[in-house]
Picture 1 (cartoon, rainbow, N blue to C red):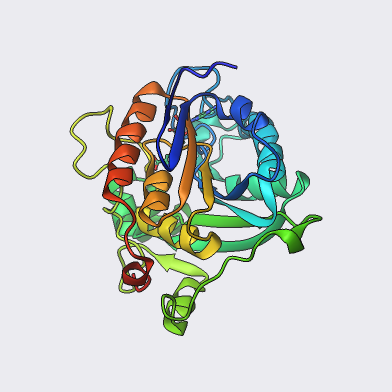
Picture 2 (picture 1 turned 90 degrees about the horizontal axis):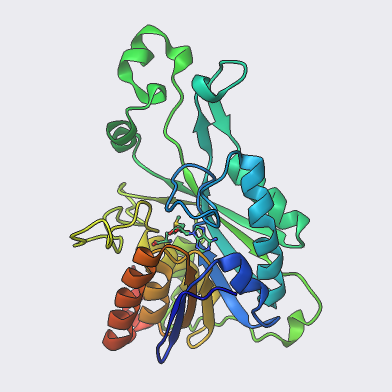
Length: 304
Ligand SMILES: C[S@@+](CC[C@H](N)C(=O)[O-])C[C@H]1O[C@@H](n2cnc3c(N)ncnc32)[C@H](O)[C@@H]1O
């Protein structure tokens, strides 16, 4: 196996490696929780490596590469525990369509089907609602233009949500895996009621997550900046709801280390893999810094 670089800290292990190969070698039932954003099919191409899962010709090809990883994640996860993926539906354009139409690709549904086919139980879906005005400013999508709304509204769509989709390993031995516990002192009823929402609002009245709270803040170069960093607030909820302190959280696509930083901040241990050397190196910087700072008290963080 090609492990290009690795860094082992007190509470984390980071590998610059192809995650499909790496995860295949991980021991069974060794991960308490995994949380990550896979590359969104061919939406962004992070590197020209043929091992980069964003480097695919079609959504079907993406699922073909992703499937062995989903299978191994099931094997390495402890019975009864979970994996959470951050995904969204994708658009296609007339230029890439045989029929010359444009519309949506059900990337979220494809990922759910792959998980279920590989043994996972579909457990939960959280809608992440983002502001359509910001999306319009960023993408200039035809689907969001007020001009189209006024003149030919059949062309318009609406904002594209993101999703956190959670799957559970429903398997023999579930009773022997310790439960994830939340003391009422640290997690009063209101916190649970907030966490239990089916939708999280980004930059909205509820402000479940601040869109700008990503590890890219303060990044000075493209090396440090990630095209698509995972919002820290949302990751934090997942890590705290679905793992105990000191347990192992895994991100197979760690990018610049967002899931790892959140895990270390909350007293978990972390394993991460990343293919692109520049992102891997940035993730190591972020993980070393988070380890030095040590955990934030869950008691203080629980109300966020
Ligand atoms: C959506 S991004 C993850 C971003 C990450 N959550 C963060 O906040 O920084 C997906 C990542 O997967 C990486 N990647 C793509 N194919 C890979 C592979 N085969 N093995 C490991 N990483 C891969 C890309 O380089 C990219 O950084």
